Length: 296
Image (cartoon, rainbow, N blue to C red; front, side):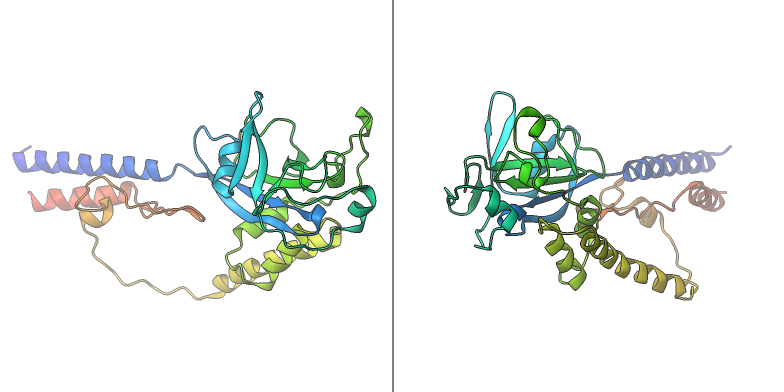
């Protein structure tokens, strides 16, 4: 084998290694959870609208909340306790079921925030994972890809007004039986058109303490419908042949000024684009064959 061929083999090997490393790095999936904070017991809807939050290695629940909202919290000795969310008092009417249960009613202690002990002596923030009352503190919760985290403000019975039954321990029985809204939260967070009527309806349902199963189902269907319509439209578009283009080594590998970088775009809301996802052994073989041919 002459020197030119040896150089060509080394070049092809280097390209294959670079492509392998680049594709491997890009195919690592980013984990996400879905977050919402609501104050439906006050009749005021949502404090934080549904949002998709990236999960990084080592993140705990408190880290997710910090990414999604502006909060105040304290260290109780058992871990962080969220005392307040940044929030605007809209002055909406409190649902009748809450009014009837609360014998006294106060005001907010701090402007611009909704805090523990606002309105009643039993108020504060409780949280749920996939519609289940959380069994661990927010500082101990380990986010799992796809989880739906909901923070809900409570004013009566330490969560009884949210559907938590505390009667077995001598506390208040659940005032309401809330419908499952995890799927709706997920869909709303993923909705691209926040100005659409479907999204606005979903937000209204998510912030309604007494929303019915039918209300939730209709809101879910409303958010699914545009996506299904888009998918059907794309499926009916006739395929057209793409014009042939020449691909240089620089186009395949990435930025010529930064060899080895993949130019992947990390979009926080939509995931990671994979510009090299289709590059494989065939591309490497073609490049290697081209180099060998030129150096014979």
